[in-house]
Image (tube, rainbow, N blue to C red; front, side, top):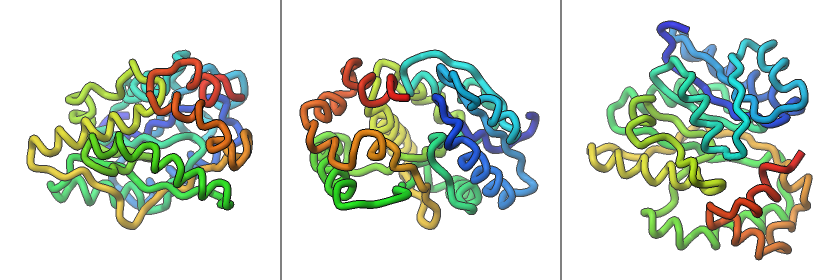
Length: 245
Protein backbone atom coordinates (compact mmCIF):
# COMPACT_ATOMS: atom_id res chain seq x y z
CA UNK A 1 0.00 0.00 0.00
CA UNK A 2 1.87 3.08 -1.24
CA UNK A 3 1.97 6.15 0.95
CA UNK A 4 0.55 4.51 4.06
CA UNK A 5 1.46 5.97 7.41
CA UNK A 6 0.55 3.11 9.75
CA UNK A 7 1.20 -0.61 9.57
CA UNK A 8 -0.67 -2.51 12.28
CA UNK A 9 0.97 -5.89 12.85
CA UNK A 10 -1.20 -8.67 14.31
CA UNK A 11 0.36 -12.07 15.09
CA UNK A 12 -2.29 -14.78 15.02
CA UNK A 13 -2.21 -18.49 15.86
CA UNK A 14 -5.64 -20.09 15.37
CA UNK A 15 -7.48 -16.90 16.30
CA UNK A 16 -10.76 -17.35 14.41
CA UNK A 17 -12.66 -16.66 17.64
CA UNK A 18 -10.99 -13.28 18.25
CA UNK A 19 -9.47 -11.89 15.05
CA UNK A 20 -12.64 -10.23 13.72
CA UNK A 21 -13.07 -8.09 16.86
CA UNK A 22 -9.42 -7.09 16.74
CA UNK A 23 -9.62 -6.05 13.08
CA UNK A 24 -12.89 -4.21 13.63
CA UNK A 25 -11.24 -2.17 16.37
CA UNK A 26 -8.29 -1.32 14.12
CA UNK A 27 -10.60 -0.28 11.29
CA UNK A 28 -12.53 1.87 13.75
CA UNK A 29 -9.32 3.58 14.87
CA UNK A 30 -8.31 4.12 11.24
CA UNK A 31 -11.37 6.34 10.74
CA UNK A 32 -9.83 8.90 13.09
CA UNK A 33 -6.53 9.31 11.23
CA UNK A 34 -7.92 10.30 7.82
CA UNK A 35 -6.56 11.24 5.32
CA UNK A 36 -3.56 9.20 6.47
CA UNK A 37 -3.62 5.68 5.14
CA UNK A 38 -3.07 2.54 7.15
CA UNK A 39 -2.71 -1.17 6.54
CA UNK A 40 -3.40 -4.23 8.64
CA UNK A 41 -1.01 -7.17 8.42
CA UNK A 42 -2.06 -10.44 10.03
CA UNK A 43 0.79 -12.91 10.48
CA UNK A 44 -0.89 -16.31 10.30
CA UNK A 45 1.29 -18.52 12.48
CA UNK A 46 0.76 -22.28 12.15
CA UNK A 47 -2.97 -21.74 11.64
CA UNK A 48 -5.25 -24.70 11.01
CA UNK A 49 -8.52 -22.75 11.30
CA UNK A 50 -10.15 -19.86 9.41
CA UNK A 51 -7.95 -17.08 10.81
CA UNK A 52 -6.45 -16.14 7.42
CA UNK A 53 -9.80 -16.27 5.66
CA UNK A 54 -11.42 -13.97 8.22
CA UNK A 55 -8.45 -11.59 8.12
CA UNK A 56 -8.68 -11.21 4.36
CA UNK A 57 -12.42 -10.67 4.61
CA UNK A 58 -11.73 -7.64 6.83
CA UNK A 59 -9.18 -6.21 4.42
CA UNK A 60 -6.00 -7.36 6.12
CA UNK A 61 -2.96 -8.58 4.24
CA UNK A 62 -1.96 -12.06 5.40
CA UNK A 63 1.66 -13.13 5.86
CA UNK A 64 2.37 -16.77 6.70
CA UNK A 65 4.98 -17.67 9.33
CA UNK A 66 5.56 -21.05 10.99
CA UNK A 67 8.06 -20.16 13.74
CA UNK A 68 7.25 -21.12 17.32
CA UNK A 69 8.57 -17.77 18.51
CA UNK A 70 6.38 -14.69 18.93
CA UNK A 71 9.38 -12.42 18.35
CA UNK A 72 9.97 -14.00 14.94
CA UNK A 73 6.26 -13.79 14.11
CA UNK A 74 6.12 -10.07 14.85
CA UNK A 75 9.35 -9.43 12.97
CA UNK A 76 7.94 -11.19 9.90
CA UNK A 77 4.98 -8.81 9.94
CA UNK A 78 7.18 -5.74 10.23
CA UNK A 79 9.37 -6.89 7.34
CA UNK A 80 6.26 -6.94 5.16
CA UNK A 81 5.10 -3.50 6.36
CA UNK A 82 4.89 -0.43 4.13
CA UNK A 83 4.00 2.09 6.83
CA UNK A 84 6.32 4.62 8.46
CA UNK A 85 4.76 3.90 11.86
CA UNK A 86 4.59 0.38 13.26
CA UNK A 87 1.91 -0.68 15.75
CA UNK A 88 1.80 -4.21 17.19
CA UNK A 89 -1.31 -5.67 18.79
CA UNK A 90 -2.22 -9.26 19.65
CA UNK A 91 -5.14 -10.89 17.88
CA UNK A 92 -7.13 -11.40 21.09
CA UNK A 93 -7.01 -7.68 21.94
CA UNK A 94 -8.90 -4.61 20.74
CA UNK A 95 -7.67 -1.03 20.62
CA UNK A 96 -9.80 1.94 21.60
CA UNK A 97 -11.08 4.19 18.82
CA UNK A 98 -8.59 7.07 19.15
CA UNK A 99 -5.49 4.91 19.68
CA UNK A 100 -3.91 5.54 16.27
CA UNK A 101 -4.69 9.25 16.45
CA UNK A 102 -3.04 9.48 19.87
CA UNK A 103 0.01 7.57 18.60
CA UNK A 104 0.30 9.94 15.64
CA UNK A 105 0.07 12.95 17.95
CA UNK A 106 2.67 11.67 20.43
CA UNK A 107 5.19 10.81 17.73
CA UNK A 108 4.57 14.08 15.89
CA UNK A 109 5.34 16.00 19.10
CA UNK A 110 9.00 15.08 18.71
CA UNK A 111 9.23 14.11 22.38
CA UNK A 112 8.88 10.33 22.13
CA UNK A 113 10.88 7.51 20.60
CA UNK A 114 7.73 5.39 20.73
CA UNK A 115 6.28 3.35 23.53
CA UNK A 116 3.56 1.04 24.72
CA UNK A 117 0.01 0.89 25.97
CA UNK A 118 -1.66 -0.18 29.18
CA UNK A 119 -3.94 -3.24 28.92
CA UNK A 120 -7.19 -4.07 30.65
CA UNK A 121 -8.66 -7.56 30.92
CA UNK A 122 -12.11 -8.18 29.50
CA UNK A 123 -13.09 -9.75 32.82
CA UNK A 124 -11.70 -9.61 36.33
CA UNK A 125 -11.77 -11.90 39.36
CA UNK A 126 -9.95 -12.23 42.66
CA UNK A 127 -7.78 -14.92 41.09
CA UNK A 128 -6.84 -12.78 38.10
CA UNK A 129 -6.13 -9.78 40.33
CA UNK A 130 -3.89 -11.83 42.64
CA UNK A 131 -2.15 -13.45 39.66
CA UNK A 132 -1.47 -10.03 38.15
CA UNK A 133 0.10 -8.84 41.41
CA UNK A 134 2.11 -12.06 41.67
CA UNK A 135 3.50 -11.62 38.16
CA UNK A 136 4.33 -7.96 38.79
CA UNK A 137 6.19 -8.78 42.04
CA UNK A 138 8.23 -11.51 40.35
CA UNK A 139 9.08 -9.30 37.39
CA UNK A 140 10.04 -6.37 39.62
CA UNK A 141 13.77 -7.28 39.86
CA UNK A 142 13.96 -7.50 36.06
CA UNK A 143 12.13 -4.20 35.65
CA UNK A 144 14.39 -2.45 38.15
CA UNK A 145 17.49 -3.67 36.32
CA UNK A 146 16.03 -2.24 33.13
CA UNK A 147 15.03 1.15 34.50
CA UNK A 148 11.58 0.53 35.95
CA UNK A 149 8.15 -0.25 34.56
CA UNK A 150 7.74 0.14 30.81
CA UNK A 151 4.33 -0.37 29.25
CA UNK A 152 3.97 -2.96 26.51
CA UNK A 153 0.81 -4.72 25.27
CA UNK A 154 0.63 -2.61 22.08
CA UNK A 155 3.92 -1.13 20.89
CA UNK A 156 4.16 1.90 18.60
CA UNK A 157 7.21 3.49 16.96
CA UNK A 158 8.68 4.51 13.63
CA UNK A 159 9.72 1.61 11.45
CA UNK A 160 13.21 3.10 11.12
CA UNK A 161 13.62 2.88 14.89
CA UNK A 162 12.27 -0.68 14.97
CA UNK A 163 15.03 -1.54 12.52
CA UNK A 164 17.60 0.48 14.48
CA UNK A 165 17.15 -1.74 17.56
CA UNK A 166 16.98 -4.91 15.51
CA UNK A 167 13.32 -5.67 16.12
CA UNK A 168 12.24 -8.29 18.63
CA UNK A 169 14.94 -10.64 19.91
CA UNK A 170 14.27 -14.03 18.31
CA UNK A 171 16.48 -15.83 20.83
CA UNK A 172 13.72 -15.21 23.42
CA UNK A 173 10.60 -17.37 23.59
CA UNK A 174 9.00 -15.22 26.31
CA UNK A 175 9.59 -11.79 27.88
CA UNK A 176 10.49 -10.55 24.38
CA UNK A 177 8.18 -7.58 24.96
CA UNK A 178 10.05 -6.44 28.08
CA UNK A 179 13.36 -6.78 26.26
CA UNK A 180 12.03 -4.81 23.29
CA UNK A 181 10.74 -2.00 25.50
CA UNK A 182 14.08 -1.76 27.31
CA UNK A 183 16.08 -1.46 24.09
CA UNK A 184 13.64 1.08 22.65
CA UNK A 185 13.90 3.18 25.83
CA UNK A 186 17.70 3.13 25.60
CA UNK A 187 17.58 4.25 21.97
CA UNK A 188 15.31 7.11 23.00
CA UNK A 189 17.63 8.16 25.82
CA UNK A 190 20.52 8.32 23.37
CA UNK A 191 18.50 10.85 21.38
CA UNK A 192 16.99 12.80 24.26
CA UNK A 193 13.55 11.24 23.72
CA UNK A 194 11.13 9.62 26.15
CA UNK A 195 9.58 6.17 26.16
CA UNK A 196 5.86 6.92 26.17
CA UNK A 197 2.62 5.31 27.28
CA UNK A 198 -0.68 6.26 25.66
CA UNK A 199 -2.51 8.44 28.13
CA UNK A 200 -6.12 8.21 26.94
CA UNK A 201 -6.15 5.07 24.84
CA UNK A 202 -5.68 1.49 25.99
CA UNK A 203 -6.26 -2.03 24.79
CA UNK A 204 -8.85 -4.50 26.04
CA UNK A 205 -7.32 -7.96 26.04
CA UNK A 206 -9.00 -11.30 26.50
CA UNK A 207 -8.64 -13.26 29.72
CA UNK A 208 -8.50 -16.48 27.73
CA UNK A 209 -5.30 -17.73 29.39
CA UNK A 210 -7.17 -17.68 32.67
CA UNK A 211 -10.23 -19.19 30.98
CA UNK A 212 -8.07 -22.03 29.65
CA UNK A 213 -5.86 -22.70 32.68
CA UNK A 214 -7.83 -21.24 35.60
CA UNK A 215 -7.66 -17.88 37.33
CA UNK A 216 -5.19 -19.14 39.96
CA UNK A 217 -3.01 -21.20 37.60
CA UNK A 218 0.06 -18.95 37.67
CA UNK A 219 0.12 -18.95 41.47
CA UNK A 220 -0.57 -22.67 41.80
CA UNK A 221 2.17 -23.43 39.25
CA UNK A 222 4.86 -21.08 40.49
CA UNK A 223 7.72 -23.25 39.22
CA UNK A 224 6.39 -23.02 35.65
CA UNK A 225 5.81 -19.29 36.01
CA UNK A 226 9.41 -18.70 37.10
CA UNK A 227 10.65 -20.76 34.14
CA UNK A 228 8.61 -18.57 31.79
CA UNK A 229 10.20 -15.51 33.38
CA UNK A 230 13.65 -16.63 32.22
CA UNK A 231 12.66 -15.81 28.65
CA UNK A 232 14.58 -18.78 27.24
CA UNK A 233 12.87 -21.92 28.57
CA UNK A 234 11.41 -23.49 25.43
CA UNK A 235 9.51 -26.29 27.21
CA UNK A 236 7.79 -23.85 29.59
CA UNK A 237 6.93 -21.45 26.76
CA UNK A 238 5.51 -24.28 24.66
CA UNK A 239 3.37 -25.46 27.57
CA UNK A 240 1.90 -22.03 28.30
CA UNK A 241 1.98 -20.32 24.89
CA UNK A 242 2.96 -22.10 21.71
CA UNK A 243 1.32 -25.52 22.02
CA UNK A 244 -1.99 -24.24 23.43
CA UNK A 245 -5.02 -24.53 21.11
